[in-house]
Each structure stands twice: as C-alpha cells, then as structure tokens.
Image (cartoon, rainbow, N blue to C red; front, side):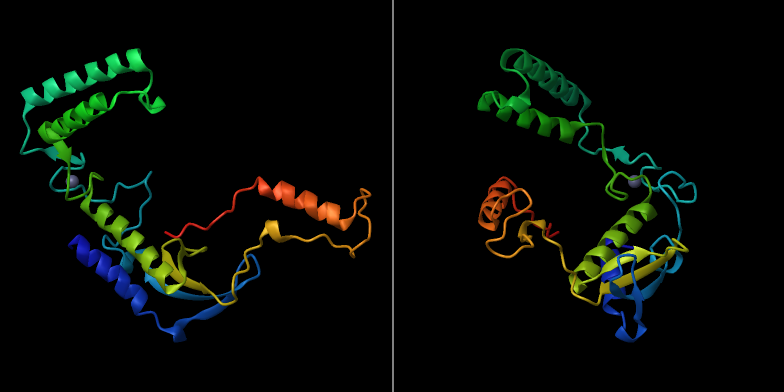
Length: 228
Ligand SMILES: [Zn+2]
C-alpha cells in the first residue's frame, strides 16, 4: 500500500465511526467517556500482525534493504565521501581545540558554513542512504503500521477524542471521547479559604497571604498544553 493510502485508510476509520456504537463508561478517574471498538490490530493495521519492538520476528523484512534500513546510494562517490568526511572531522577537532565545544556558540560563521557544505557532500556521496521504502525501519509493513498508528491518533485528536488499546486484549483498538468537559485543575488559581479580615494560622491577614501567593506564583511560568 502507498503511504498516502495508509494515511487515508486511518482517516476513514475515524470518519466512519457511528455515534450509535458508543458505549458509555466511567474511566479510572471517575470521568464519563464514550468508547467504541474500531477493530483489532489484525483487521485494522496494514500488516495485520501484532508484535512488539522486542518480539518482532513475525514481521517481514523490507524487500529493498533486506532489513538493514539502508540501501546503496546511486550518487555514491567513495573518494569524495572519504575526503569530505576526513576534512569535516579534522575541521571539527581543530575548531573544538581552538574555540571550545560547538554548543557554546563561539565558532566563526565561516567554519559553520564550511561544515554545512561538507556535511551535505558527505550525505550525497555516502555509499548508502536511508531506505526510502521502509524509512530505515527495515520492514515495509512495520513502517506502514507506524504511519497508520500515527494517522489514526491524529484523526482521533482532530475529532476531539483519543485512541487506546484494550485493557483485556491489547489487540483491540478503541476510540474514546470524554463526555463531560475535562476540568484541568489549575493550582495557580487557588484562593485561601477564610473570610476577609480573618487571620491565617500563621498570623497573616488574607491580604498578606494573597500577596505572598502572588509573589510565589510570579516565578512559575505559565504552562500551556502542547497543541500537536
Ligand atoms: Zn527498506
């Protein structure tokens, strides 16, 4: 299957979800969620196989790189590759001894530019390159599964839900949505629980306490949820 079609298939699975298939459940946090089973790994995923990174003997090796993840590069030029690699290494060693580590940001721009050029020559003239058919994974079907899983999660997120696997059987794939609005507790907004004018246990007035809280919170950066 083409990678484009793998993504399209994942999006269709999410698009085809029927609301009537939702089953209301309560999750471990006591929130109400709607859950629907999308299928199993065997009938959803491109490979139709269940495996783990540490037990993937049932996955077929990529026919192009035979599992190595790299293939011979057509632009391979071993003499130029060796020269560029040697020059880049020497230039890096020299720069480190002269200016310190690259990460310290003290290398002159002319050296950085030169290294960028050398790295690009190294990449194009190298004897091998990442296998484009399996994206270096070594198995086409594992690559398709990876793309499918990512596309499924992305489509679920866009629909306002999430993907999860079965607690009983990890081969079952579910789509879920929260029914109640999820209240994200914000520690920054707590207010002291005593009446105005009343002293706190430390002998402070609520106003002093509030001022103290504000000062403490000033040092805490705002936390934003990642938006993809
Ligand atoms: Zn490959």
